[in-house]
Amino acid sequence: PNRKPLHGLRFAIKDVFDVKDLRVTAGNRAFYSPSKTAKATCPIFQRLLDAGADHAGVGLFGTLRLGGTHQVSQLPRTTTFNPRGDGYQSAGGGGSGAAIAAYDWLNFTIGTNSE
Image (cartoon, rainbow, N blue to C red; front, side):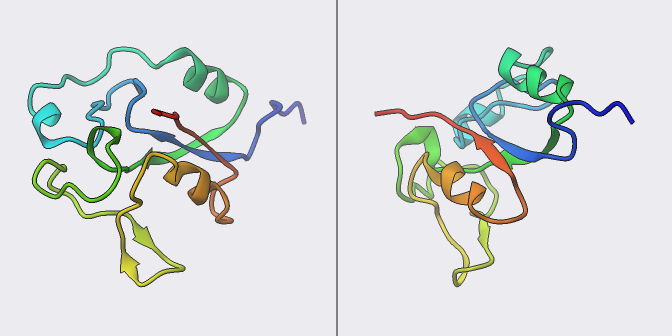
């Protein structure tokens, strides 16, 4: 069969990139209500989909890329479940995507460095 180059690879994307029909919130409660669903998908994400990769989800991180646990301003959702840790844990920073990629459920993640 004629397969696309990234066929079968699963990935997650950080909550700062536009994904059609999803809201970009940067993990912050104040951004959620006024944010609109994206009308288009960011180019890098679209190229991955076009090449056959499967979008598995959106990565959670500390609110506004501040790192740590800022519970007052975070979205009303739990922190990410860590199957290798002790349950639900704050990633503590934007680099959580790199750590998630080490788990065998995903092949890679798309994130940012906000230093």
